[in-house]
Amino acid sequence: MTSRVIPVEPFVLVVFGATGDLARRKLIPAMFERDAAGQLPAEAVLIGVSRGQLGQEEFVALAKEAVDEHVPQAERPASLMERFSKRLNYICADVTGDAGWAELAAQLALYKEHTIVFYLATGPALFGPICENLGRFNLARGNTRVVVEKPVGKDSESAHAVNEAIAQVFPEDRVYRIDHYLGKETVQNLMALRFANGLFEPLWNAAHIDHVQITVAEALGVEGRAGYYDTAGALRDMVQNHILQLLCLVAMEPPAMLDADAVRDEKLKVLRALKPMEAPNWVRGQYRAGASAGGPVPGYLEELGAPASRTETFVALKAEIENWRWAGVPFYLRTGKRLAERVSEIVITFRPVPHSMFGQGAGPIVPNRLVIRLQPDEGVKLWLMIKDPGPGGMRLRPVPLDMSFASAFAERNPDAYERLVMDVVRGNQTLFMRRDEVVAAWAWIDPILQAWGQSPEPPKPYTAGTWGPSAAIALIERDGRTWADGGM
Ligand code: BG6
Image (cartoon, rainbow, N blue to C red):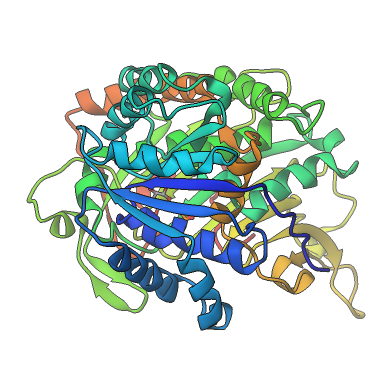
């Protein structure tokens, strides 16, 4: 089966921060891939904006380099790159001052019938000034949309300031707060799994589910982003957005329809029902030197180039949702850098059978588990107890019903940014965070940040290449449970 490519209407994508990491790693390659797939109309244009004094040719060269680096060779024949290059324009502008804006306005005036998407691929400190200038130069007209990257602020107060600055210029129905986890194929499959199958919904509650684990583990360290990362830490960088969004999709009530506000209303209710966190339901860690991907790697402080920092590179939390569906079901959340492997998965563990009719020789009956793997090897596994084949009596063991998306669907899996940018062009906000969701997420995170800020204890050290500090293991073992490492 091949996916349908539905061409979009003519648009201009204006990327602020066009020479930065995000533009090069994600946005330019994503646009190239959509072009290659035949989704972009001939009139689609990308205008790169940044303060670098680049000529048009230099920007095209930068884009080509980005495509060469991030798009597999077989997907980028020279003819496609040539076509893509013709869509590219560059403007040097001072986003906090006046320079370059008149030129941008003149360019955009050429595209009166196009949808205009302003993508703010810059630090959040620039969101306000850029929006202000878009308003001042009368560029935030009716057919325009703005996309902002996470993090939206670093706590409730700063998020409010950023959201206010955006709201001065763009109404909420034209604001797209991106969380690229929502664009991942398997994350959307979570909705398909829950709401397009009759099997799970009757069991999807505290009566049948023992607990939920959400792990987003990375093997990489901070990779040259230490400057940003040290001001954020894992709680702000991963939990406030990606992990809470995953938790919402697992826990939300069925929306009446796949409509942006219907889905976001349900997610919001989950965020508002989160029980306020307190010790000892959290663990924060920081990696020390160790080994990863077969080689020695430095610790966080060495990578940062500073002898002291209390920024956490690992977080484990035991969260609870105070509503009828989930009362008493722990949601164990875990994320970190330089962990044993790169794996993101959601594990739903069902309650044990009430009684075993099998004798001791059959072995233990392991509770059923549904594992939704986001990356790598995306897929879904349902662990069931079955009889060991052959004679020798009734011996039981857990075996997965295993669906790997790579083998079930031969086609390439588009990157989250490809889908999300096209959704912005189409005006579909379903996979973007609404302002009140961001507010509710920060309201839950703020007290954790405050408690950590006031605590005399530094983050717990862990060796790079392991599963985090031993306290994270103790967090779940205290409840008589274990982390489901290794897809089980
Ligand atoms: C980003 C974080 O939002 O997500 C990074 O800022 C993190 O620190 C990245 O590495 C992980 O994304 P993915 O898609 O590689 O799991």
